[in-house]
Length: 175
Image 1 (spheres, rainbow, N blue to C red):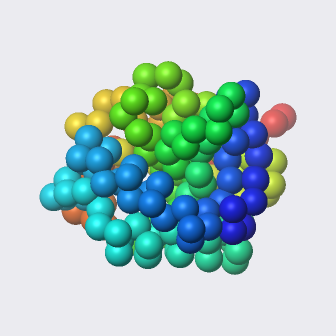
Image 2: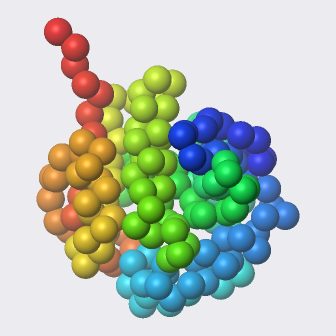
């Protein structure tokens, strides 16, 4: 995808990453309040971790049209965070995920991005379902998964060692 716009929601533009935007991800995942639910240690990401992730997301979009995307606000172009679909390593399922700068929490941006991604996923025939999960301590993130219509499935320790509540969203069946 390499920096191209994928789609827009009412207030956001979702676009791919370029390697020259690495500093944005370092700032986002370098925040202790953002990183606390992303790893067992809760440690902010290093530049190397961010670089590996951006390269992976670029490749994932180029090969499968999935990946975590940049979220920018339409009104002023501000970078607010990232959201999109990864591939959950243990199962190979598409997995919805998002992270926003703390200053944008509570403004509805994560829900707006998640709803847009949900609809985009099915409109573009990416599969019959996707999963999402969040650390059991991350109530706001768990609430977003439920607000977009995902069903709780189970709690387990994920591949990174976090105790997560898992959810699933299945393609709606129309009769």
